[in-house]
Amino acid sequence: MTKNDIAIVLSKVLSSKKEACDIVDKVFEEISNSLKNGDKVVITGFGSFHIFETKIKKGRNPKTGEKLLIAPIRKIRFRQSKGFFN
Image 1: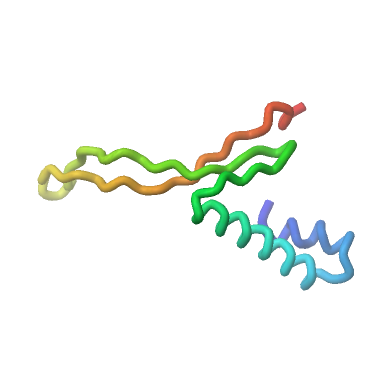
Image 2 (image 1 turned 45 degrees about the horizontal axis):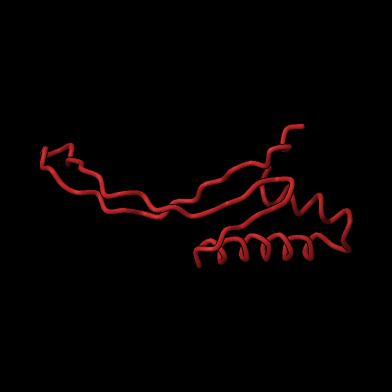
């Protein structure tokens, strides 16, 4: 399912597809902003999104074999609600 599919479903309830697209974009924008600020996003009955940071890892350049450290990065983790598949 894409954002467009979600907007089409919402347009059946709202007055127009453009309004539905605007709402879908705003929802995802707010989720993104909350995660960027380090907040946890909880959607009851669906699941929660939160940010975690990886640790520094040892790696190597595959072309040269040179050893290097891989910097930590921020990633999003999703955990589904307990009753998600029921």
